[in-house]
Length: 422
Image (cartoon, rainbow, N blue to C red; front, side, top):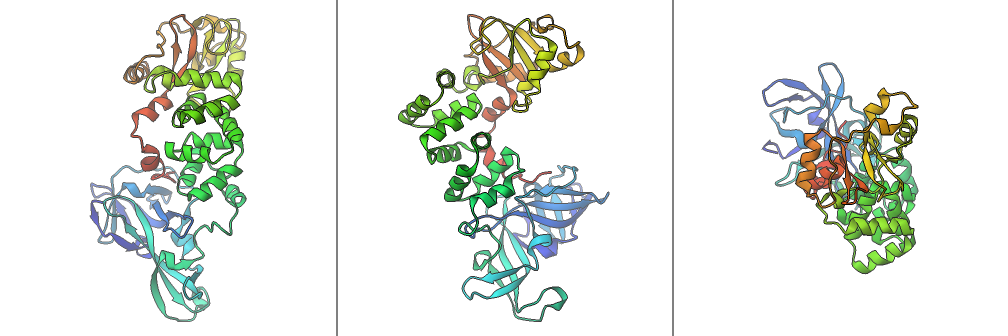
């Protein structure tokens, strides 16, 4: 936060006008969104619900707020106008926390929440809830009897945060069931290590594999290390091969060998092949499971493969035509057919007649900068990787390139810091 108050009571923000850097009004604050955390830790402030001129309510990430001062909120000017939709892991302070009955930890006395304050963390743009303003005495709303009011720290009350002892992992999973893997990864990242392990153990292999791919390296290693080795091998097999190879590379060599020995032989072979390449090369970045078709396949065959819901958008954007065998490393690579071309031709058309063979594929030792330049120059979302003998080894997708271009801690500083951006 470049300027403004370092602590503010949330009720004082209700109705406050929001301005962009030029002084133009964006809207008015209607609520504050937080993420409750286990172990009595103060909730993280995710952002503000802002009502814009059209009466639409949007989400303003707290990281895009540059000042809270003199009864106004100032933003960076970058505002997503998509309608706000509350996620299961998000709590509205004004709408859900105020007027709750909670308990003072030391006295064991029930009190009513009148307000909470949010404080800016030193040297950061992050905010968290630190104080709770409560009233002693029973009753709610207009029926509440007058009583002593006091301000206490968040940890001095109980009844708000997720309770690690009272709430089982199944209850958490019911709440998280509709979350995308990246959003669930954000939730897991902020749980305690004990709770994280319980939730991971309760997820099925495919769901856990998807979530692991979205977590920082340290969390991946921690979670995998707490699984039984047989299950850890199953989860690695369910991950995208390039992500699984990256995770394996983070483990001690003896652990790598034990897990590889428990995997299906062809899966283990893919892992070993990927791990043999330098990390920041096409071979180290590629996935070994692109869509591969034979020359006699039709457009209908190709579209059927593209419709696979388990494929990422980047992998579904094109198919690679090769001579047998179909598994990587394939027979001779003949060319690529892009999804848009598949939509323009009759279903019975052979894919071999639609090949884009003008662009040379990349070799496995192509360095990351060259891969990035290729994708940018030709507006591609994926590029084939072919060995000296002409066999298709795999494909590098734009999301894997971005993973390696962004700062190492981007999943923590960007993804989780912007949770709830809708």
